[in-house]
Length: 269
Image 1 (cartoon, one colour):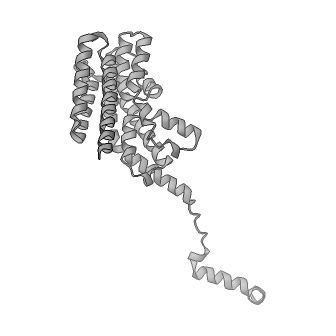
Image 2 (image 1 turned 45 degrees about the vertical axis):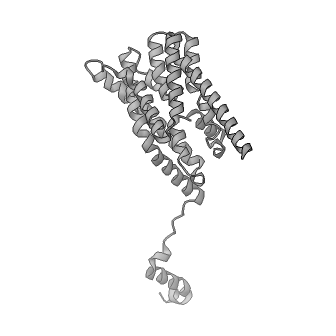
Image 3 (image 1 turned 30 degrees about the vertical axis):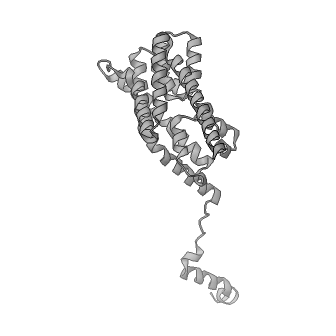
């Protein structure tokens, strides 16, 4: 002991100091890198952003699963469609087309017309935030109406790649999960649910009424009504396709007239 106290005095003093202050002897925890912590925060925010959209996506996915079962199609078609063509309204249309063995050309044309609106989404969707090629490819693939609407409501400075991709992944989970739940529910029900095929029409009716109430676009609503009426009279067998073409043409005409009128008023002023 005398040797230890004489020769190893500093060592013994350090041991006593650590015993008196245990906090200094513990190895400090390595904090997360700032970029990792920020990415996790953004991903959490993206999942939270998806909750409002999920309230509509999940029930619609259940309707898809029920329609597949009631149409006599195999159950695995629900997840297969949800992964191959992540587009809710289109998938509901495809179920009816597959059940009636619609020609492939008609299916392809319907897909083009129904999803052509996504071309315009790309002009304002923040794909430039996603740098990784795989991430950007998924962002394009999962650019559904709900994802576009949720992202459009965010301020510019709050958008990020991690938040965007997390929100899109969560939306697809809701959709695929809803489809599987619908398949299980359809298999458990003793009898088919009548009127379920009206789910898509009801969805678009509600979206149309909501858009009209929020923007009060009476001319657009009237143009849509005229398009549908003309299509039902002239081409009842392909009314949807004809109505969409007429409506797009009328909207373009209205935009041209409005732009010219605005330019003329500016010139006169």
